[in-house]
Image (tube, rainbow, N blue to C red; front, side, top):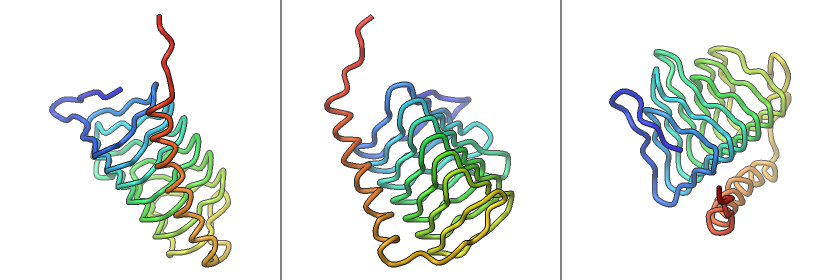
Length: 174
């Protein structure tokens, strides 16, 4: 469901997919072929949320902002189930593992993988192409070329899934 907030309303790119139960509110821009999955919430009330192309925000995730802390999620990013992204930046081709929390001002660089359940504290910056894990999170190691390729594969699979769900999910009649 799309909601305006004050004078701002969500902007959707070509072939984007908003699943049933998802809420997209206010100053939110969603890129081409990106998907927002079931019961996720993107609330752009205090600053903007920008979602790149072919990015997926999976079920039950939250993207929120703070004054002075917009959320930017670039192209080809996979955000796992039940993730909280708050006023942070996720660079191109990264994957955020299930139930991770990333706070204001944090930056996950290109082609990085945040392990499930990790906590990224405020204003923390990480280099590109690394595995980040823990609470608080730290760099564990560099990713292999194969692991980086698999990150792109995950983004591509979710583009395909979005078309499948758009065409095959039938909502119950009241």
